[in-house]
Length: 205
Ligand code: SF4
Image: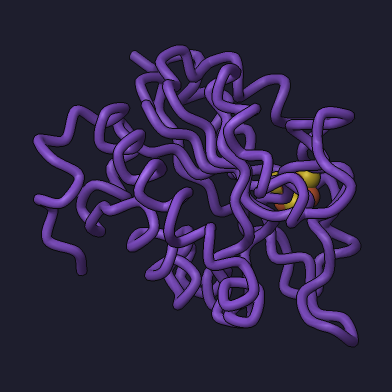
């Protein structure tokens, strides 16, 4: 018997709302279950993720899993991790990289989908689009300000992160506190949310 979340996921996978704007056509890439414990809200799939249909199946995903201290098996288990971007389909590429998530997507689907995830213990708001959408007026002036103030969002179970793209290497070098202070805390919180035996015990792949 299909559940309410199954029905919403089926509707999302058939969505064509902004088809006219998608250069490669609709292919929503999401992962979710009603019992997901960690929710990842990111921007939109890139071209490689669009081609495979697997979220974060790219160098950004490798880095994100390393940041979280989880292996592929854990990351791709929807009963543990949900991946729900601000735009579910690849939006195309502009002069300076991928275009922003389609503006129709999150307002259409997030209100139907997010309330069905009833056991989320930690939400990772990845990148400026997710922070704009989820933190609203609470976010800082810049992404760096928002991430630097990460402790104040924890009371709501949220943790803002920069995008794990290799293109953000310079940002990571300029902000060593991120790896020194935030990442150990992130790994511990993910391990607690997922009931992992120890945040250092998973073999990363
Ligand atoms: S980006 Fe979102 S709104 Fe647009 S077609 Fe894909 S699922 Fe539908």
